[in-house]
Length: 241
Ligand code: SAH
Image (tube, rainbow, N blue to C red):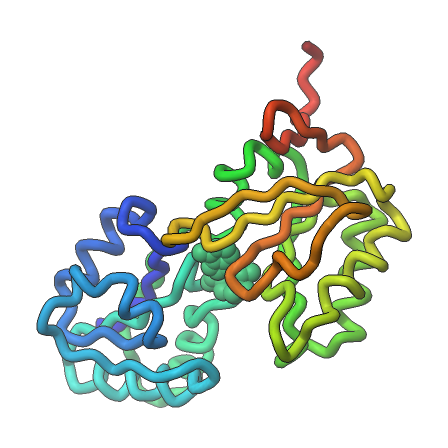
């Protein structure tokens, strides 16, 4: 059996019981080095196939080859495996195979959901996820989605917001969002959620210090009704109070 397991954002407490049981049960763990480290205590002496970033296809092919020999294999992703993770790639590769292979996807808490809990209750109304990485989606398409989401006043969760290779993507994205939302719109930065340097920062489109944002930050841009109260970011559901 081939499992694709979402580990949650980092700490064991935020993993599902199902994910923990599967990690304990399987014979082989396949994953990006950093994620294998996150679950070191569960992995023990198991066989580990661990590669660096940007080797996803090789890693997934290797996992499929191992599972075809009859071994129980877990491919691990941080957060949820189906949110910019490994679940889609595994299912795409398996769908191209002639032989059958049983695959089970195990959900995990994705960064936006864990980050939202840290920041308060920012996702109480309609929201969307947009990745600012243009490695596999053209920037023109990302811009289109930013226009659509901001004009419809979604709460917007930005993944892959800013990296050394893409230092200006967040600023460019916020410039588009600002065409539809005011400078006072609340932004929550959830950094290293579930990890050692976890941090919640509350700011606004006008005041954001983009240099605080890195590749383990998820950026939550509020809607027009989102407000701050006692250090919490709140998007009203719409109750009459
Ligand atoms: N599958 C992952 C997302 C992978 S894309 C999930 O469901 O969470 C990588 C992006 O996710 C990062 O650039 C960052 O924006 C976000 N992210 C992942 N882990 C995070 C964490 N622990 N804290 C904050 N953001 C995180």
